[in-house]
Length: 231
Image (cartoon, rainbow, N blue to C red; front, top):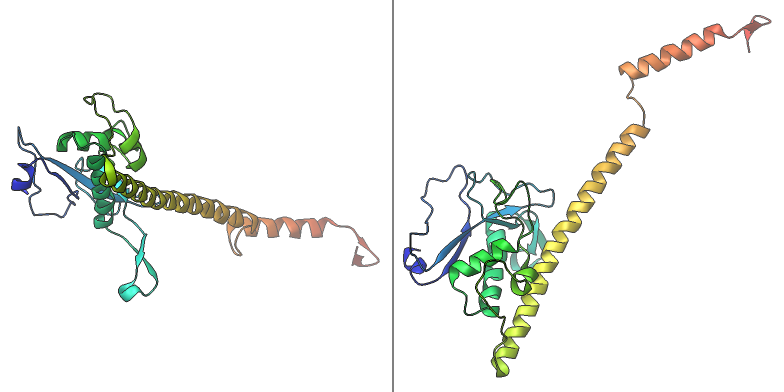
Protein backbone atom coordinates (compact mmCIF):
# COMPACT_ATOMS: atom_id res chain seq x y z
CA UNK A 1 0.00 0.00 0.00
CA UNK A 2 2.86 2.36 0.75
CA UNK A 3 4.17 1.89 -2.80
CA UNK A 4 0.70 2.47 -4.22
CA UNK A 5 0.29 5.69 -2.22
CA UNK A 6 3.59 6.87 -3.68
CA UNK A 7 2.25 6.44 -7.23
CA UNK A 8 -0.82 8.70 -7.20
CA UNK A 9 -3.16 5.78 -6.46
CA UNK A 10 -6.43 6.20 -4.60
CA UNK A 11 -6.71 3.25 -2.22
CA UNK A 12 -10.27 2.41 -1.20
CA UNK A 13 -10.38 0.25 1.93
CA UNK A 14 -12.72 -0.69 4.75
CA UNK A 15 -12.60 1.52 7.81
CA UNK A 16 -11.00 -0.27 10.78
CA UNK A 17 -13.31 -1.86 13.32
CA UNK A 18 -13.04 -1.50 17.07
CA UNK A 19 -11.51 -4.97 17.31
CA UNK A 20 -8.93 -4.40 14.56
CA UNK A 21 -5.32 -4.96 15.61
CA UNK A 22 -3.67 -4.63 12.19
CA UNK A 23 -2.39 -1.07 11.62
CA UNK A 24 -4.30 0.87 8.99
CA UNK A 25 -2.10 2.54 6.34
CA UNK A 26 -2.08 6.31 6.42
CA UNK A 27 -1.26 9.08 4.00
CA UNK A 28 2.15 10.52 4.66
CA UNK A 29 2.94 14.19 4.17
CA UNK A 30 3.50 14.92 0.49
CA UNK A 31 2.29 11.47 -0.61
CA UNK A 32 0.86 11.65 -4.16
CA UNK A 33 -1.71 8.96 -3.42
CA UNK A 34 -4.73 9.06 -1.13
CA UNK A 35 -6.57 6.69 1.19
CA UNK A 36 -10.38 6.55 1.34
CA UNK A 37 -11.86 4.55 4.23
CA UNK A 38 -15.38 3.20 3.76
CA UNK A 39 -18.12 2.02 6.11
CA UNK A 40 -21.06 -0.19 5.16
CA UNK A 41 -24.59 0.94 6.01
CA UNK A 42 -28.06 -0.61 5.96
CA UNK A 43 -31.51 0.63 5.00
CA UNK A 44 -32.23 1.51 8.62
CA UNK A 45 -29.17 3.77 8.85
CA UNK A 46 -27.23 1.34 11.02
CA UNK A 47 -23.59 0.64 10.21
CA UNK A 48 -22.58 -2.82 9.04
CA UNK A 49 -19.85 -3.08 11.68
CA UNK A 50 -18.58 -1.31 14.79
CA UNK A 51 -16.01 0.99 13.20
CA UNK A 52 -13.43 2.91 15.16
CA UNK A 53 -14.67 6.40 15.95
CA UNK A 54 -13.96 9.09 13.33
CA UNK A 55 -12.28 6.70 10.87
CA UNK A 56 -15.05 6.46 8.24
CA UNK A 57 -14.68 8.86 5.29
CA UNK A 58 -17.86 7.87 3.40
CA UNK A 59 -20.52 5.17 3.63
CA UNK A 60 -22.11 2.95 0.96
CA UNK A 61 -24.61 0.05 0.90
CA UNK A 62 -23.14 -2.79 2.95
CA UNK A 63 -26.08 -4.56 4.64
CA UNK A 64 -28.39 -7.03 2.88
CA UNK A 65 -26.75 -6.37 -0.47
CA UNK A 66 -28.34 -8.63 -3.06
CA UNK A 67 -25.83 -10.89 -4.78
CA UNK A 68 -25.68 -14.14 -6.75
CA UNK A 69 -25.73 -17.38 -4.81
CA UNK A 70 -23.06 -20.06 -5.12
CA UNK A 71 -22.89 -21.53 -8.65
CA UNK A 72 -25.52 -19.02 -9.75
CA UNK A 73 -28.20 -20.59 -7.56
CA UNK A 74 -30.56 -17.64 -7.26
CA UNK A 75 -29.82 -14.54 -5.22
CA UNK A 76 -28.78 -14.08 -1.61
CA UNK A 77 -28.50 -11.08 0.69
CA UNK A 78 -25.00 -10.50 2.02
CA UNK A 79 -23.57 -7.99 4.50
CA UNK A 80 -20.12 -6.62 5.22
CA UNK A 81 -17.75 -3.73 4.65
CA UNK A 82 -16.38 -5.40 1.52
CA UNK A 83 -19.58 -4.68 -0.39
CA UNK A 84 -19.47 -0.99 0.50
CA UNK A 85 -15.80 -0.87 -0.56
CA UNK A 86 -16.73 -2.33 -3.95
CA UNK A 87 -19.33 0.40 -4.53
CA UNK A 88 -16.90 3.19 -3.66
CA UNK A 89 -14.04 1.68 -5.67
CA UNK A 90 -16.34 1.60 -8.69
CA UNK A 91 -17.27 5.23 -8.10
CA UNK A 92 -13.59 6.20 -7.85
CA UNK A 93 -12.95 4.53 -11.22
CA UNK A 94 -15.81 6.51 -12.74
CA UNK A 95 -14.41 9.80 -11.44
CA UNK A 96 -10.88 9.08 -12.67
CA UNK A 97 -12.26 8.12 -16.06
CA UNK A 98 -14.44 11.22 -16.31
CA UNK A 99 -11.72 13.56 -14.97
CA UNK A 100 -8.35 12.05 -16.01
CA UNK A 101 -6.43 15.17 -14.98
CA UNK A 102 -7.42 14.88 -11.30
CA UNK A 103 -4.92 13.33 -8.92
CA UNK A 104 -5.81 10.79 -6.23
CA UNK A 105 -6.38 13.40 -3.53
CA UNK A 106 -8.71 15.38 -5.81
CA UNK A 107 -10.71 12.27 -6.67
CA UNK A 108 -11.10 11.54 -2.96
CA UNK A 109 -12.19 15.13 -2.34
CA UNK A 110 -14.80 14.95 -5.13
CA UNK A 111 -16.29 11.74 -3.70
CA UNK A 112 -16.50 13.26 -0.22
CA UNK A 113 -17.80 16.64 -1.39
CA UNK A 114 -20.65 15.14 -3.41
CA UNK A 115 -21.77 12.62 -0.76
CA UNK A 116 -25.19 13.00 0.87
CA UNK A 117 -24.67 14.30 4.39
CA UNK A 118 -25.63 12.10 7.33
CA UNK A 119 -25.40 12.64 11.07
CA UNK A 120 -23.84 15.81 12.46
CA UNK A 121 -21.84 18.44 10.60
CA UNK A 122 -19.42 16.69 8.24
CA UNK A 123 -17.28 14.85 8.73
CA UNK A 124 -19.54 13.01 11.18
CA UNK A 125 -17.77 10.72 13.63
CA UNK A 126 -19.82 7.72 12.42
CA UNK A 127 -20.76 8.44 8.80
CA UNK A 128 -17.90 10.67 7.70
CA UNK A 129 -19.00 12.80 4.75
CA UNK A 130 -22.10 10.67 4.20
CA UNK A 131 -23.62 8.35 1.57
CA UNK A 132 -21.90 8.27 -1.82
CA UNK A 133 -23.70 9.78 -4.84
CA UNK A 134 -22.09 8.39 -8.03
CA UNK A 135 -24.01 10.58 -10.48
CA UNK A 136 -23.09 13.78 -8.63
CA UNK A 137 -19.47 12.68 -8.39
CA UNK A 138 -19.09 12.68 -12.18
CA UNK A 139 -21.27 15.70 -12.96
CA UNK A 140 -21.33 18.22 -10.11
CA UNK A 141 -19.19 21.33 -9.81
CA UNK A 142 -17.13 20.94 -6.65
CA UNK A 143 -16.25 24.02 -4.65
CA UNK A 144 -12.54 24.45 -4.03
CA UNK A 145 -11.57 22.11 -6.87
CA UNK A 146 -9.20 23.33 -9.54
CA UNK A 147 -10.84 23.75 -12.94
CA UNK A 148 -11.61 20.27 -14.22
CA UNK A 149 -13.64 19.35 -17.27
CA UNK A 150 -15.25 15.97 -17.72
CA UNK A 151 -14.05 14.37 -20.91
CA UNK A 152 -15.25 11.44 -22.92
CA UNK A 153 -12.07 11.27 -24.95
CA UNK A 154 -12.13 11.01 -28.73
CA UNK A 155 -12.94 8.31 -31.21
CA UNK A 156 -14.14 4.83 -30.31
CA UNK A 157 -12.25 4.80 -27.01
CA UNK A 158 -14.09 7.89 -25.83
CA UNK A 159 -17.45 6.40 -26.78
CA UNK A 160 -16.66 3.13 -25.02
CA UNK A 161 -15.61 5.01 -21.89
CA UNK A 162 -18.81 7.05 -21.92
CA UNK A 163 -20.97 3.95 -22.31
CA UNK A 164 -19.09 2.22 -19.48
CA UNK A 165 -19.58 5.22 -17.20
CA UNK A 166 -23.31 5.33 -17.93
CA UNK A 167 -23.72 1.60 -17.25
CA UNK A 168 -21.78 1.61 -13.99
CA UNK A 169 -23.51 4.77 -12.73
CA UNK A 170 -26.86 3.13 -13.49
CA UNK A 171 -25.88 0.02 -11.51
CA UNK A 172 -24.67 2.07 -8.54
CA UNK A 173 -27.78 4.25 -8.55
CA UNK A 174 -30.01 1.17 -8.74
CA UNK A 175 -28.27 -0.35 -5.71
CA UNK A 176 -28.64 2.85 -3.67
CA UNK A 177 -32.27 3.23 -4.78
CA UNK A 178 -32.93 -0.33 -3.60
CA UNK A 179 -31.40 0.53 -0.23
CA UNK A 180 -33.64 3.60 0.11
CA UNK A 181 -36.73 1.58 -0.92
CA UNK A 182 -35.98 -1.00 1.74
CA UNK A 183 -35.58 1.80 4.27
CA UNK A 184 -39.05 3.14 3.43
CA UNK A 185 -40.56 -0.36 3.64
CA UNK A 186 -38.86 -0.94 6.98
CA UNK A 187 -40.25 2.34 8.34
CA UNK A 188 -43.74 1.64 6.96
CA UNK A 189 -43.70 -1.87 8.46
CA UNK A 190 -42.82 -0.44 11.87
CA UNK A 191 -45.71 2.05 11.65
CA UNK A 192 -48.20 -0.68 10.66
CA UNK A 193 -47.07 -2.94 13.49
CA UNK A 194 -47.54 -0.11 15.98
CA UNK A 195 -51.03 0.60 14.60
CA UNK A 196 -52.11 -3.03 14.82
CA UNK A 197 -50.91 -3.22 18.41
CA UNK A 198 -52.94 -0.11 19.28
CA UNK A 199 -56.12 -1.47 17.62
CA UNK A 200 -55.91 -4.91 19.23
CA UNK A 201 -56.39 -3.43 22.70
CA UNK A 202 -54.68 -4.49 25.93
CA UNK A 203 -53.56 -8.11 26.30
CA UNK A 204 -55.61 -10.34 28.66
CA UNK A 205 -54.52 -10.04 32.27
CA UNK A 206 -52.94 -6.61 31.80
CA UNK A 207 -53.73 -3.68 34.10
CA UNK A 208 -55.79 -2.00 31.39
CA UNK A 209 -57.73 -5.21 30.73
CA UNK A 210 -58.55 -5.66 34.43
CA UNK A 211 -59.71 -2.04 34.68
CA UNK A 212 -62.04 -2.53 31.71
CA UNK A 213 -63.47 -5.73 33.26
CA UNK A 214 -64.09 -4.01 36.58
CA UNK A 215 -65.84 -1.15 34.82
CA UNK A 216 -68.11 -3.62 32.94
CA UNK A 217 -68.94 -5.49 36.18
CA UNK A 218 -69.86 -2.21 37.87
CA UNK A 219 -72.19 -1.30 35.02
CA UNK A 220 -73.96 -4.68 35.26
CA UNK A 221 -74.43 -4.31 39.02
CA UNK A 222 -75.94 -0.86 38.63
CA UNK A 223 -78.55 -2.02 36.07
CA UNK A 224 -82.06 -2.27 37.71
CA UNK A 225 -83.76 -5.68 37.93
CA UNK A 226 -87.30 -6.31 36.68
CA UNK A 227 -89.20 -9.38 37.90
CA UNK A 228 -86.13 -10.78 39.63
CA UNK A 229 -84.13 -10.59 36.41
CA UNK A 230 -81.90 -7.96 35.01
CA UNK A 231 -82.89 -6.29 31.81
